[in-house]
Image (cartoon, rainbow, N blue to C red; front, side, top):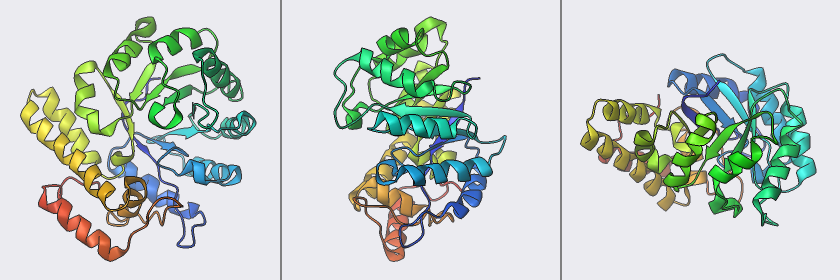
Length: 301
């Protein structure tokens, strides 16, 4: 099954003291479903995975699985700089979620695509009965390999390889990857700021953090594109980009974006170091600035 439509990169809900608040996931899940989000990508970059312990990541996996819904597809990122830990997380997730994903080791960076295939093969084998996705985000991992080549090499090595979370602005590689083995693999586009650019290339599934906040806007872009109203679609994409730029300018998008969920009625709590956590008054000012550029009626509700 190929996952379609918007998949939100989920935040890790926390109490004010920075401990996990997984009780919030029930409301969070329903919020996303109400906004027609098709799935979530947990324990990823948006979810502060590098600041969480293995035990905490398992706690998040369990909480989402306990709130599982047919309306929300669950992908669990189990990647880790330590292959042993990644395999442990994959084994734990195997009977709890719909799919797993890994990014490449990001400290001692891989210097050959064969090593990436081997790493993915070992992790995928720990959850052999569910789909496996490679999480391609070279700006953070340094694993800037061609995904067209990766798929061709990995296809015969990883039986449960389902596709790629493609978080890169290389649209040529994205397009080639979609065509490998006659379009066999699900290439989920993961660069929110280029959502509109992915549409003429045939993207049908997207993973991103701003789908938490602006799901109605992105569905409207897609609808306008399909109706041939490109200028209107481009105007909305520009607003989505400004959303990211404005929040990023207030202390960094990861932390400020997580805190902004409070404005939308889902308090995901603070972010962990090094991300910033702002005050309620800060968010009132930010919301006014966003409303002024025409986003008032385009937020998730």
